[in-house]
Each structure stands twice: as C-alpha cells, then as structure tokens.
Image (cartoon, rainbow, N blue to C red):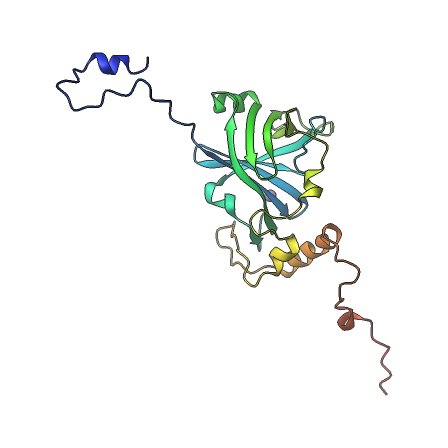
Length: 248
Ligand code: MN
C-alpha cells in the first residue's frame, strides 16, 4: 500500500530505481536500550533508564522494581542522562550522586503504544522490557505527589513503576534474589575494591578525587547493605582499642 504512489510515478522498464518488493516485511522496530543502575548515594535507589530520542529518560526507584503486579513502586523522574552513561558502573567520586553505581540490569525495551511522547505527556507509558532480570510488560504511571504530605508540591515527577500480569510476573523478590551487577557480577564492595574502578565525573570542574566524607558515608551504608560474613578476618587487629598507655 505504502509504495503505490512511488510505483505509479515510475516506469520500472525505464528506471533503474528499485520497484520495492511487495512481499518485503516492514523493517524491524528500532532497538531501544534500557538499564537499571543500582546506586548507593545519599540513599540506596535504582535508576531506571529508557532510551528515547537520543537520551536516557530516568526515574529513581527507591525500593527497586518489583515483579509483583500488586506492588507499585514509587519512581521519581530525574533528569535525562546521556546514552553513554547507560553502561556505566563504578564510582562517582564527588558532587551530585556521589557514591557507587552498579549496572544491575540491562537490555532492550519497546513501547506498547505507538506514540511514546503522547504516552509520556499523558503519564501512562506501557512498555516491554527484555533484560536479564526484568522482562515482559510493565507500566510507568504518573501519580499525584507521594506520601500524601499536605503542602508537598506536586511537580509531576512522581510516577509508579508497576509490573503487568504476565509470564514474567511473580512474587520473587528480584532485588534480593539477584542483587549483583550484570556487567561484572560484582557487589558494591567488589566494584569499590577494584584496582581502578571506572569513574564518572558528573560536575564540570570535578577533580575526581573522592572526598573522604563521601567514601566514609558509602562504607557505613555498605555495612548495613552488604554485611561482611562473620568469619571475615577483621581489620580489628589494627583498630582494637589499645590498653591505656602506662608511659611514665
Ligand atoms: Mn541515582
């Protein structure tokens, strides 16, 4: 159908232009990247990112995605990120978002409606995910504020991330079941412990030198999040309180 006018205007015995194969199938839909970056910064959250129009649309999901359709997860829309950030795993040494980033899931996504921009404006974006951990049909729905705090401004950035019922839904706690990186298989500790972790400088003028405060903060949170097994040889030998000095 679509090529009829193109063909009507051309005599293919006289032009080398291709007639177009009427049996040819439509081009496959473009592949769109998505990722989820587990981010230990001021607080632990999961950054959910969808490639669209040359950027990564981004939402911070404090509790991470849930495979249970009954569990709606708050997703605060954050600023668009550059596409190249999507494969990043490593350390943000200073400034906004300072902490550790783990590439927790990665894959492709497809919209379940034709007009992505209209769906975003409407605040109802139905998508299919094909990642390692997240698959099948999901929806992002814009919601009014959160927590019902009176006086809290509704800035239109509060969304809910919800799994649709399908063969990929279930009550498996995916964030607990598969806590590690899909890039390095590492934990936050292992990403931090690399000899030369990748570094992302988010602020212009950043020097890349981690502030001790930031690192100490992250390490404190790590103890709660990824406790070391009890039989880990402790650096206690160094930090054991010393006997009071009996110097004379
Ligand atoms: Mn983040």
